[in-house]
Length: 323
Image (cartoon, rainbow, N blue to C red; front, side):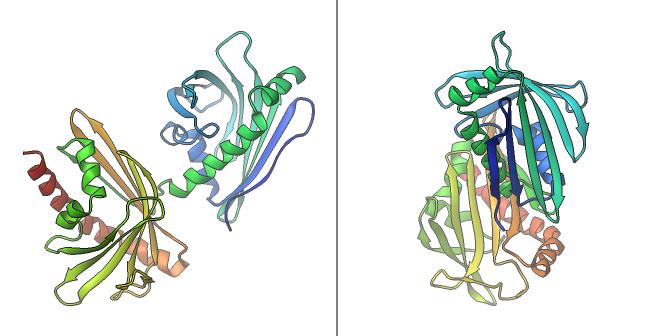
């Protein structure tokens, strides 16, 4: 079942209540809401980004952050936590930093429903006038819908302890590393396990586009695979699914391990510091059975070793490019 918005509604002259069933376990949802590494990546309405200045999630703890609007305007925010019960409850006071800011109290509950979570957020404004201003001037109803929708989307990509996570640093600028992932001729030089080569059949770099290729295996011949791109933000983020396929591009089971997820969701992020690039790659099965997920978990160590060989090839390729 997909994430669904149950409701975002004004329930009194001072309160907005937002509910949503999220397709993620409660502990993961709570972590996304309380870990500054994660919350900065989804908090706020569509188009907004965040800079976390401090975040101390405990009774009396303060969370200060700057929301950057799509129009270039910055909005300072301050939250003071009143009650914290991990992973069930957060109660806090939310305000800006000015004298005339809208002030409201929020009670967030996280209720487990199997492997899903029912999130309920009660926002009670100090006065009816503040609620009126929030809805009319700041579009609070639409903002709440977008807020939880961004959380739901982020949870789909948020790494868990059962994910494949690989972090490598390359002595090359980020743009070059990004180009290595997004140029067919470059991918042909390094993608795949150590000692192997690939043949590119199709490369269409866009959301919904595919990278369709064959790995040249000494015993099995051509082993076909493909990426299907979901999100591309140059030069920092690529989200794609990877699968085994046939020569025509249809998804197929792994030849030597039939009980294997048909699709793996991959999140590739690139950050640059002092001319070097930090690569983070996370992978998890999607639309998989319990048996397929178990098989994936058992192979995590082997996959780590396989990707180490692939990234050594990438490192060699990048070193030649920066000469």
